[in-house]
Image 1 (spheres, one colour):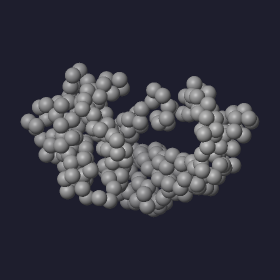
Image 2: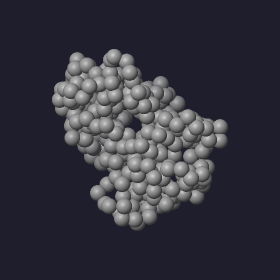
Image 3: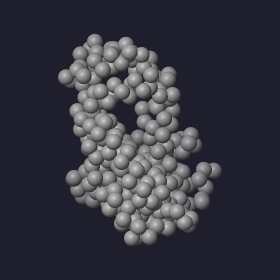
Image 4: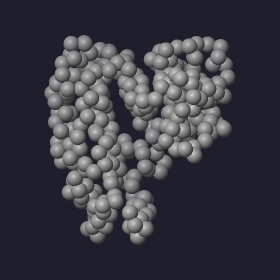
Length: 291
């Protein structure tokens, strides 16, 4: 993209910035000043925790939909209809459409969608119909292999399998672990400590950098079974903990630490100049207090 188009794009972004919170729903946590990606993680964790202890007659389900990462798959007229819907002036739309249709420009639609609802076949069918209509309008493609479904604990296994069959999406019991483990990558070697053990529990807890961060936050963790539990028990026991640490719920600190360790781990892989924060524990504590 030429310098001239980059300047125009920068001007458009700066002009739009003050009203972005009105154009983008509060469920979208990325790209908006003052919103954090960890917000959605907390919402998902709370939803999953509620589903695990749910006792009411009507069950609940959550579906994580994955769209294939195709940078040139979005239909331009679909993007234009979105701009019309949010009420942008025609001159703005002309500028934006001119920029995105240049040969060197590509757009990536958010490739992950989380759907929550009740465990009825009718609602499952409606959910999939909406996704199919969206894909048809935008030219996005649904990846059934990468999508997953979780049902609440009060849903019988036969009903869960029927819902999975209707949606053509496989079931999972450990939703959070699946969401994160699918991004571990093909290599078996940890990029941070060069240890030939690379799995989710290593990335989040047992890698020396992660372990040092946990101990800096709460030094007495070595006295219990914090570093000895399996992944699912470790996450569940800390997520449901009622303990306070520095006058803050430990469950909240735990969530923020997980997210920041995962964020830093990804930066260390994909950004060669990234340095692991020397004051990692202070950064986590600050985020937890802001939440």
